[in-house]
Image 1 (cartoon, one colour):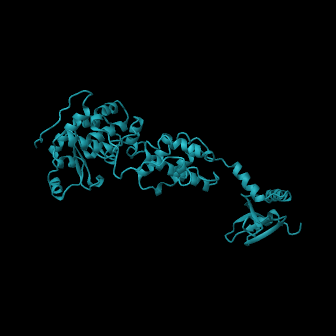
Image 2 (cartoon, helix red, strand yellow; image 1 turned 60 degrees about the vertical axis):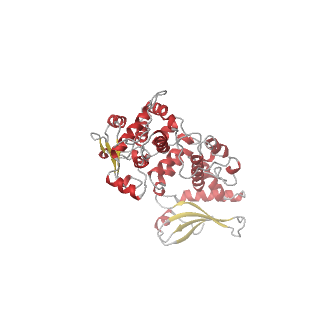
Image 3 (cartoon, rainbow, N blue to C red; image 1 turned 180 degrees about the horizontal axis):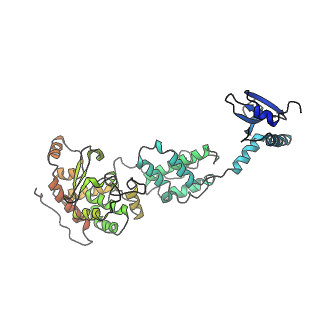
Length: 409
């Protein structure tokens, strides 16, 4: 056929343009020197369009690309499909889709989190995604291929926790929806997203109970001794972290990010630097004997008191919450133990209001704040925390001494 290409021409042609080999096959050269094979043909216009001209890429040309012979073979197959009334481009896409390996939900979710870490607010946010999309919540769908995830599969994950932990369930639904949207964009799924709320899951799941802002489910203080006994029976690092958190009435981040340099075990003091405190002031915490026992039992393998799996990183921000989950205590939260402490201090002791507020590192009145900066009522707080530790350590049936008069000093 006149004007046909040959291997030498394919190799030496450099001028941008399109060079015909006949039979609808062209060598296309871009301005930057890229070469590729194109099959150009006419077909039925797509709905809503008058265009009936189509191009199908057959691969790059050159020493490391598709050879002239292979390009001609592909063009011949495309012409055969046209002769049978079939669209070559549609057939190509169907073949590529069939040949593509569809990843599992678990593998794709893990890859998505790793790829998008930069957009998350902080390490805690990353840990929340990892936990909710991991085996603890999504065990039923992680082994499934992305194109196998349907409404029934999503409901199997959400229904067990929808009314128990509505906030977590709602966030998990949104994250599953996000993952499945990304899977569709990558060509791993077709059709609607089974995790969509409006117009879909909203009709299948009951309206979730909204939490009051600032509320954290707390354990009644009368139930604390039994809980502490169960917690101490656990041997995990997360269990020790949670116990220290309860004994010191601190926040999750304050415990998990704690470093050994903050502790003076001889003086029985833990000083949290200002930059790690919510109120922006350094916070001294008197350590009880039980708190000291926990700290002395821990190996020093790095700067962090509770080291994580990653070198130089502390335990995951979700570690203590997951400890509660493993104990089947999804009815309470880690932060709620601060409320447990405050309720106990108000109802079972006569320690002054300011002393209890200082123990929680709460911001209080300007006058009290000035007093806090001068002396922070440390010795009063030591007696308060010793009384708290005694309450935590009480055995079932014990008569716990309740302070009914203001302690001195």
